Image (cartoon, rainbow, N blue to C red; front, side, top):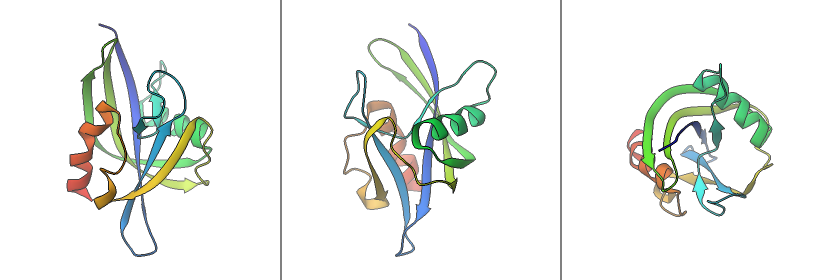
Amino acid sequence: MKTIRVVAAVIKAINENRESIIFATQRGYGEFKGGWEFPGGKIEKGETPQEALKREIMEELDTEISVGKLIDTIEYDYPEFHLSMDCFWSEIVKGNLILKEHEAARWLKKDQLDDVEWLPADAILIGKIRDQL
């Protein structure tokens, strides 16, 4: 089975009520269109995961991020491929998260993380995010 290596940004911010919030995006294309995920994408040859994540967020959301601590590497078997996804805490450095490839986006508080239909690999991460918020 083919393995696809990707990175995902768990973008964290603080809302007006001083609560931590997490940025979620809804896929706007492809086989998993409509599913919710953490933004990111494929690691190109010669890139570190952190470099790939910064590039992907700039391409997809026109936003510069800082990449923090690795939360986890999710390993998940989809029917057609194996996904290996490095997931990092991230914060906005500059930009306004403009959706270029996604259908929709939401900022979710800890108690709202189950309010969207996560793609299977991303869903595995929710418990770890909840524990660390």
